[in-house]
Length: 471
Image (cartoon, rainbow, N blue to C red):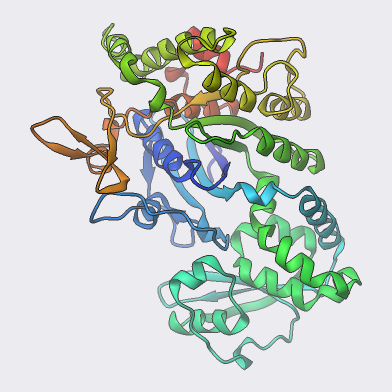
């Protein structure tokens, strides 16, 4: 990585159907709108590419998004890219889609950090790092429970792709993967400490980490009676919880069309942050499906979009800011204004009005840990900074696409003359995606990491300067 490169590791956290996958889709397009272009990835890149994300999550025949299953999280579960901007630093960015249930049990969080401490105390003899290489040059790194461990002594048992996606593999399954790709062990086995295991976790097949923990459990903890509980409740979330330790940014996803808010999730993630030492990620709240709030107002935002001959990013920011400038007074009104009382209360519950415990408190914890100015506890603004209202099915002309009645996983626009698929249109030309709210979220994220190109800072409105600030 060059001196002009920056690493961004972004955890997108939310309940099922909260819109995490579509938010990733939106953010990838937002990079393109901001002028970033993907560069070629090295063969030994640890994560899957953005191109793989589109392959994994979309149905090529219908243009609809596949549902996201609860999955066994590994380095390949990340989607990453090397992004270059002609007026900014290069970015090595990766996303991990994390189910909110990883944070839902505070006892599990406590047990995870207890296990983490035991692992970090382990000096030698529990984790032996080794590399297997295929003729193509692709590598798989494993940790083995001893220097003498004989993986070839296990019978190869193939595992179906779908099963492998949702369940961690056994040694027999790993042996089958290595045999299928003609992988051969190279070099010596390095006896690594628990601290080094954590530092290199993104390189190592998570399945082998789990198996090492199980095989060395008694030596590691001295409590064999805890093994079943930890394997079923803690180790299955080991990778995503470990990833968040070093993530630069955490995005909480809130489906604005759902009955439940993310107030509880923000509390749980805040409990996790309380346990972290030496690091605090930036945090953001992304309301999803906010196209349901636009309705008959969209023509007003179209006027803002075409109001001035300025940059494309500035035009989109002006349209989005007009929406926010109308939204905030409604949230502050006793009757919820044009939002209605129920919707206004739901939004404020997730954001955490005044000294509430929801996102506002989570943000305060992050800012305090980063030694930045914390929120004023008597500030009664409806929304704190770093809150964004995002929506997927809106194109660059601010046309809102609707769910296809014959396939609710995709969005279409039927203007009486032609039927267009949103995913098809925006993937043909990535600037055709409006990236409503997600463009502003990405600019906020880049700004918090001190890597927003100076040429784009002038495109921020006064409204966005507040939501992108720590004031």
